[in-house]
Image (tube, rainbow, N blue to C red):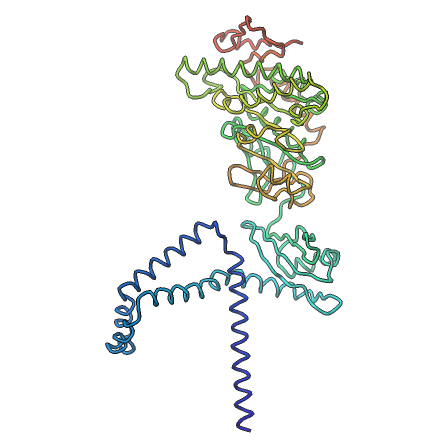
Length: 502
């Protein structure tokens, strides 16, 4: 009986030790997964730990400290015995001991999150044909509100989860935005959020946020409505697949700028025969260009205008143009479907010459035009070095990217896969400035609402309620011996004379 009792005790002890070892290795595994070779913070902590260990062991300082803290354990005899060992032995031992405990400490938070989500998924009692439940293998905190959970779900397909969306929301305590299979179909990815964006935001909901000059509306984020000052951007790219909301966003940006700003000129390059930008044609401070030849001509003249402005700035010792103070309009160059203007043809050499010239002029403008009060907005479905030159892409400060269907498309625009992971909601996009990426629901402005807003703007400009200095940059090719001096003829500017052909 005594032997049986001893055996059972030993069995329980070994079982407990086995479980503890299993937990240790499980937690350490999650810590090891988070290990990033290029992590500055990780290497800083590791080197700092080694330096502390070295300082404590090299002169046996750890023994001095131990004798003061635990004098009953670290007596003179014990210390005399311990100092016989070389300091390097203690340095290596303490270093290995630190590493032994650092991985579980590093992975403890991840382990607790996985266990918590596993418990939530277990509430659904979902099992495969062999009785095995789904297993949470990874939890990624995307931002303050969003979490991504990866589930190993052999034998349980996506459809079974989508059919239980309400149950999932109740069990997880979060809104389920996306459920989709991973590349390996044995794994399923869940996108969760504690706060969701609306599926539609009216332009008029955001309008009151957009009251400062030179600002336009980005949309609604989880942190509230976002607006942007074009002067601080200074150039913008709008990208996204067909039907994602790119064109609607582009138009509402232009309307926002026109409404918020006096002293503004728009040059809209729409090579689809002006179909998209036609509603803007009636505005006296807007020009719509519909051909490659016209686009190159206006880009040349805008580049000349930029040079004239620099001459004016040098003459008056200015760092940048203030439209109100210097009576020189801010200029927006908008290019719709930029790929049509910038992509070379395989067969048409004369067209290619125009395209090459347009690319060179755009590169010059985007590099230098900010101080001169000239800003570019490029919209396109696809961004590659063939559609928009890499040098141009590097000088774009703000990027609005709607849903992308490929990883490469998202990576090219944003440098990450956030646009690929967006839900299939029209108008949902990622607003990127610097290293900051914010998911937003872009404002929706219907065609009828657009017509109404532009009609009101036409009336305001005719009655001088809204003004611009003018004159507009010519759409005709200016010969080298012609001198159209916009800067130094204030009487002509204030008259608002239009130098472009009717």
